[in-house]
Length: 244
Image (tube, rainbow, N blue to C red; front, top):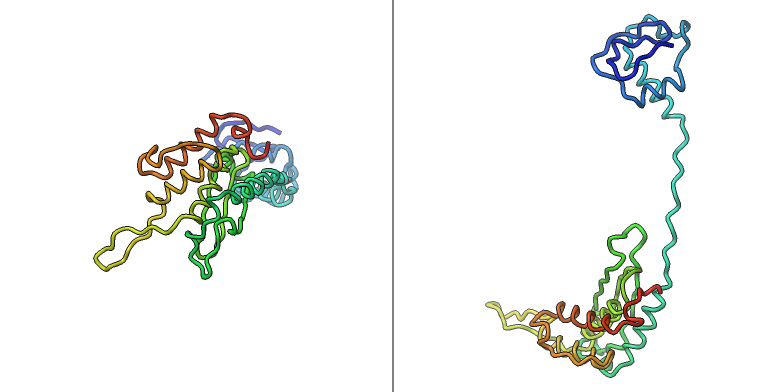
């Protein structure tokens, strides 16, 4: 077999047969496949002497080989480590027994329910979401009296605990509204001064932290970060990931 690599197909000769002219080089993949599995013999091929060009013959061979090659084995998805969710449940049970969680002022149901009676839903970011492995998100539903949190396995206990406390504070905090607009509608304020005061109270009861409601200005999220930093500075279990 005479075959030159890396040159236009018009210069190729396959088993002494000129396979025709082509204007573009053949791919290395196609050449390798044909070299390993010639699609026809030297003289008995039905294509010998036909109008088919070299790329036509090689493309046919490549398609045939790909159709018959076994599917590449797929790696099984690793099972997520759910041990961290047990700690989330334990920490929630600890926080909901604190005095601030006895309030039912954040409930929108009739009858109202106390913050400590909110149901907890826990989820873990999966192995296909590595960018979220240290992240946490949560939400409290006042019309359903439930809390849901999604946490990454590498999130610190300080971060997860503060998230749980934040959502419990929503369930305990009275509803705050802003000034009425032109239509008389008063927009609900979720992270206003009243909420920040409840968050500071909860941090005092949960962690023994003395923090001013204005320590982070008017941003509840900055106040969250302030509390998390204070907890992680304590070291110990607070700087560990929830799965540890």
